[in-house]
Length: 275
Image (cartoon, rainbow, N blue to C red; front, side):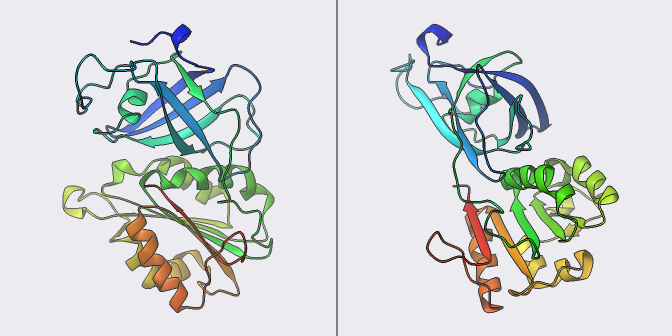
């Protein structure tokens, strides 16, 4: 195991919750002041290659012992906590058993040390969405993370617009933040939560939507249940997670007159691919 003195660690894991065997929510506290960020942005987490992997994950490729054990493995993760939270940054992470970093992150216990970048970055934010437009947030898996930050920060201050979250996973126990989102939906009349799964045969007790998110989007679920018009003059749509979902949903939206946003050309489709 790489020791802290050998690795550029500057933060501590202060909380962890296993949503399911492959999904983890962690809170990371920096040694100094937490960076300022806009909801929807991401930061970088890192661990040295010499840190152990979680049991059951694939072994490291290459010869043993691991070469360059003090080399820092870094990956970007969307921040899930409110930008008003100054004690820690929260992240929602999926285990990639063959990956380099997530098996090591999943192995960390409370008070473990790790690296967190001194700043956040990214353009996947509400900054360029006019205050009078509704917001539809579509996500697979851990693509929900930036929306949690947006909702935790903006929802109470944006009563004039409606928010809808369409979140998909294979089975219901992989729907992270489900209890919190259901509570928010009960308390906030301008928010609707629409969970969906794709493997109904494995989860017969689930009572939400079944199917791929792009199909549900095309079938009018958002308009019927969230009362949010899926029209380019009324709503902005955020797409985050699986690139296949993003590409298919973008095609549906463009056919309805939506336009993808870019730094040079503001639009009403905002995307963030997770691999």
